[in-house]
Image 1 (tube, rainbow over the protein chains, first blue to last red):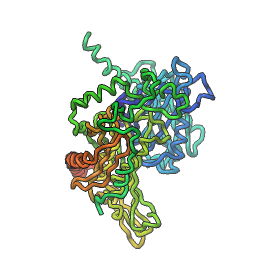
Image 2 (cartoon, each protein chain N blue to C red):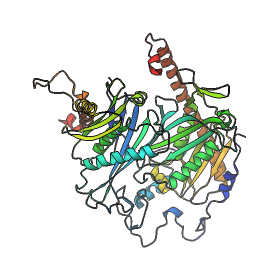
Image 3 (cartoon, rainbow over the protein chains, first blue to last red):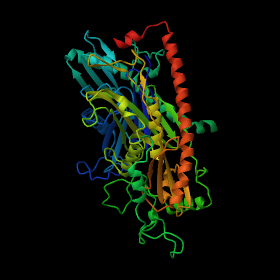
Length: 247
Length: 358
């Protein structure tokens, strides 16, 4: 399976930006974060001691509709918890995240938005990191589809997702906790538990063998969290390459 | 029909805002260009963070692009007086244009200096409008998000969005660059609706020209699925089943934006954001490679000499021809690349096309 690709900080105007491409589902997401910004409207009446996280999802070939609003709400609630909005300079300010779906199939009205959700989560997180927004943790997400025969498929394509009985999106934090769970369709609790275990393995990676030994064969990139970590490591390496050269 | 000057074009020529202060030789102390008029009490703008609305405008409901400092403005103007641009370009020189294509047809990424945008063209079958049963639909959609510039608010339109959308509409849509009649499938029942979505990723001036080049490239690059009418039913063939069809482009108009400085003594093409902010007025000319003018607008700012417009039209023509050659060469390169890849796909032994259509 071809892993996703991502790059950080390639836009000039935004404070932080990231592009994330998932070959399995075909989505290509561009994310940009501006933070901390002065919110023009007085929108801080609710929680003046914290930063307000705003999320905007721009679909590739349609105008934004109900699906985008729904997924924006989910993203806002997850990222609002992850962003440390009480750090210096952040209270009463805004963290504005813009996500543009620049590649991949268009999500028709009425189709599930969960197929693109993990890609949006990853692009959003990487943009936040690129903008140096203080975060309490990182996370990685995965989409799992349960087929009619009961098999659990990782990152199903839009066509396969349509045929699936149920769809599950899990976000697992870097501390191995379940951060988000969104499910659609018909499923029982056993299926969900199976899917959750699958998601934990996908996101965390099984770096420890059954006998407690670290598996040296397995590459770190195979896990979702490892992928996020490596993308950021690569970016930092290229940012500080001038220092390495001078040593 | 093509290239016919629109009534608006002439109208907008003459309805340009009359100058508030007479500008010209012998009118006492040289008045400042209109844009740089500041209230005398205003202290020099402090260094404001790029995202923050300037202080003192406490009631401001909209974010604004950070203002140019006086020193920067003077530097740009003074340099132009000596016929030098800040980035070393000639007055009629564009920043390097870099056009690349995505995997799908009609997915164009354009980089014009630091201005960068993505255009996606898409097609779907819809019902034509009642008053125009023979015409398909074509829409250009430009929505500015805070990705392009922190001064743009998500989900709220601003002046630039309105004016850029209007210009693109006039230059491309209203000049019939895309033949909408060829999009008709069944009269009054079904037609193709073509949509161009512009995503601005980075804004560093001259959004209109960049978007115009990208949309025109996208329209020429795009292939819509083939549709056939059989027994009164429309059958749309997938891209795998039938060779997709190119759109019918009648002519290739491009917009060329000029900015004027120093009482319109200096006129430059493709201004960067800082040059735009320092300018006193703009002039947009839309025309195709044949030199047929389809849009002229003197939207805002100080007045210009009518002869200047005539001169700039010929310069814009040269530039439009040049840009169209660039577009054609990148299109040709991409299509030959695709043809090769397509041939390689077809001569492969594995049969994965069945899998794809399951």
